[in-house]
Image (cartoon, rainbow, N blue to C red; front, side, top):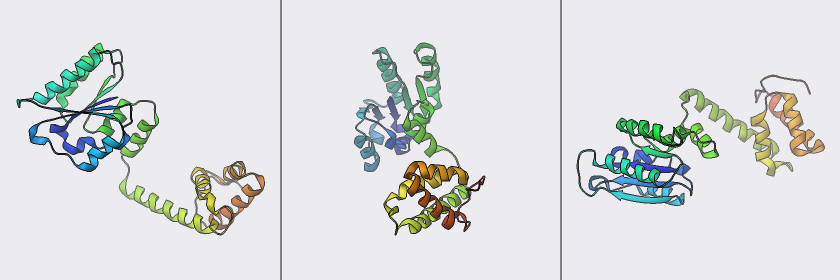
Length: 228
């Protein structure tokens, strides 16, 4: 996927989400003399992604000059036979006209996406892959107080789980136990998943420790209950 960064317009904020870049991506940063500095950490994210990076510096200043560079590059890309998606990273809504143009002419009607950040473009592109799902989850809006409460409760439960199993042979299997707890919806499913994960004998031991030391004490909410 191509990412064309209107750096004069977005600055470093436009590079938010660079951690989702992949080696197959091509990043082109359009900039001018007035904005030729970048935070090292942001640049390193791009370089470490192993994506192809190109710097395109404006030769002569002028009104909307960088915009013309970006639209010209887009024509060059699609004119060269590229049939994938291209992202314009900019806050300039004037680029919607560019989207409309390629919507009528590109094989993929949603070929050109527009957003103010790299992460936003990945989410908007809506490709069926892991990074899209990761970016969508990271960028979704959540109630602040509820999410902080949920996070703290999850950390408390994780700590308690570690305490329960640390002196047993399951202490090194903390992540498997934690996965059971996160996927639970009732005692019956927790019981069955314990057997599936650890085998009948060990699974029964793990389930009983969870039941007796987490469920019975009210440390954990199991949702719909079922006696096992």
